[in-house]
Length: 462
Image 1 (tube, one colour):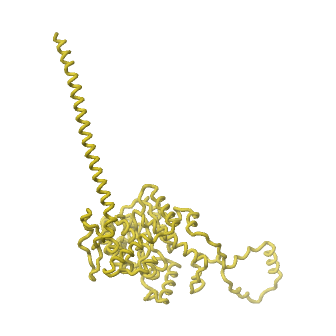
Image 2 (tube, helix red, strand yellow; image 1 turned 135 degrees about the vertical axis):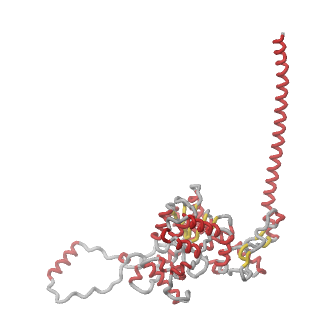
Image 3 (cartoon, rainbow, N blue to C red; image 1 turned 30 degrees about the vertical axis):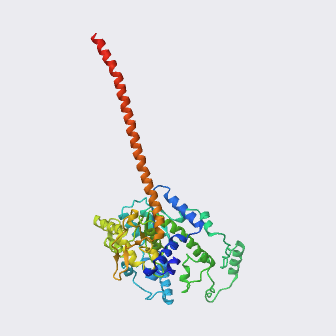
């Protein structure tokens, strides 16, 4: 994701060779560490061990993204306060231009908020996915906790993530050697002993009457075990505490987890994004995965839903979400199936590509093989926007230095086809010779047997 923020989205046509170089660097030269690749490949193999396809789902439920787009009211209780607090911090630092309080429902209807896991589950059921579908939940810690995933888990019981597919030891291997951290908070007080409790009660009995109630005890810092949950600070102060060394280490671990999830999502049979924007309004993890899948294997099914359309469809059957009618099912399937084809690619090119070409690397990172090599044109009539930018199709002819590498596999495939044709022809000739020899032997046997039959008949006449 850092790479996508540093690269210019689009280059002028005169720098086409530099654009191809950027594509090769982004999708070929940059690689994960060996430990991450091995663990990611191992998880993919475990997902494919059952012989069934698996679906990767990225929730997009991150506090920064929710605060940036004003989606606080999707949650309840303290989670709404945390999002509002983060949004006020973004406004104070100039990251967000707007008000702190914003109607989340309006943002949701405009497609600016993530789809909740329950809504994704309803959409997948409408698409016909059975309850035993293997769904891999990608991304870091889901904001809102595991309770947000309960409705999705109730609809699809094979809901897994990296923690359920690999051991703690396997995860620790990618972290490398780490020094133990010293806790900066004071240890909890020891429990009172029986003798001290008796002494306290004896002192209380010997004390005389008190004319007025005792003043409240002096304030003291709360111990970590006394604060309920990781959000307990919001009830104590208006300022978010500085991250501890343990928090910083966990943030570094989350980057490694996202690298593993990236490998699993790129190799998935189906990918469904819950959101495609980060905490700065730019393409996020899901956008990069969709771009990589489009570049590496465009035939894989990648849903690119228009959240504005999906929210409208869900609101139409709000009173009976779990018992939709047949017309609604057809509408959902038409939209989702269309998002995997040309309309979805055009929508992605309009929304994400101006910020990062890695989220939609076509046509810059693709080229057409000339017809002389045995391939037809990909799309001779490109789709353009009002600014005359290509949205779909319009790939250039591959340069000369790439043709040699493309001709080798094509010629090899042609030679294999010729060899197979020769083998078939030779086998046909052999079959003809065998059939002829068989017929001759059959004829000879018939000829040899025929005189004997005549002799027997002549003997009977005699």
